[in-house]
Structure formats: C-alpha cells, structure tokens
Length: 114
Length: 110
Image 1 (tube, rainbow over the protein chains, first blue to last red):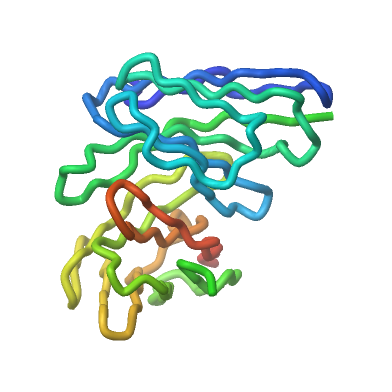
Image 2: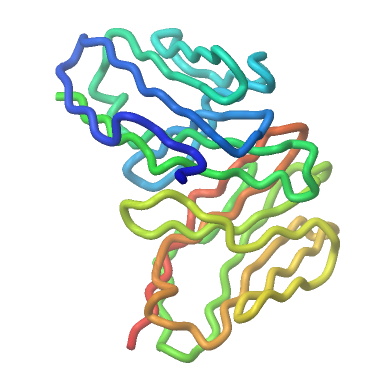
C-alpha cells in the first residue's frame, strides 16, 4: 500500500489554465505539506496543514490554494498557470510529535506549463 | 544567509572510498537534523536523523552533529555506485517546519 499518494503524476498544460493535484496519506499522520522542487533540485516548502488547519503559508502567489478536507487529504489548486510554475510538486506527511518527525514523501507530480 | 547550506557539488568519489557531505544551518534553535537521499526522478527518502551532538551510526552511514558550530555532516563508508544520488540536508527549526538545503549530487565511480 502506498503511504503517501499523489495524483496525477504528470500534468502538461497551457499557460493560463487551472489545475489541481490531490494527495492522500494512510499513515495516520497529523501534518501534511506541499513542497515545490525546481529544476535545480531545491525543495521549498509552500504550505503545511495540521489536522486540517493551515499552519505554514510561505510566500507563495495567491494563485496557489491548498485545501484539506480531512487530515488524510491535502489538495493543491493552481489558477492561471505561468511558465515559472513548472516544477515537481511533492506532497509529504509527518507525525510532528514523533521523536524524528521525519517527512514521508509522495512520488511527486511533475507539472509542465507550455 | 541561507537557512540551510550545502556544497552543491557535484562530488565524485571512487567505489570503496568515504564520501563526506556537509551542511551548515543558521538557526541556533534548530532541533533535529535529517539526511535524505533522492535518486533522479524519485522522491526523497530518509537515510538518517540526528538531534544530539556527536555521531550516530547506521550501517555504512554516520551522521555527525555539532550544534556549537551549527554543522551537520554525513559520512558514507565503502561507497557503492548505488549510493550515487542527490543528498539533501534538512533542519527542523520550529514546530513542523522542515527546511532543506539545495542538495549535494554524489557520484560513485566503479
């Protein structure tokens, strides 16, 4: 069973379109994240939710809107896509109270904006 | 100053050698430290975490933490070609925030 699963794995779309990425975790974790990884492999946090509550909201254009319907799901909607949005988007989850608090990552969703 | 800095590399070592990966961080209040490995086209996976000063060993991997110097390193002994990947240092600064460095690309040559 996949612990953190994201869909779709690949998106290719035109500038100006709107797209969504879905994420689900079956680890029973209380915190979920969206990270963006650019072409240079730099992983940058975008958002974090703890038990459906937004706790981290980095300087991200408001075209990006996360939604957490429950603590096992965290979706990302992107409006008016731009070329610079092309990247791999990783969903992750963790149990913050655990000693390690390590992140478990999904397989990533590669977004290409043409 | 970046919150987490790594030598971007690339780092190239011969098979069987020791690979040494370094990371510094800026927030003295940082609580725990992680090394992730990421193969090309894959997601990051945790290799080790450390939160106390000193060394922590797991098989061929040793993480070293020096909070006074704000420095954390990863040593890979008897490097194998399968160790070729990008290694990401990550630091938990507060609460649930995990900040990553830019990664060091390691190549182990047979």
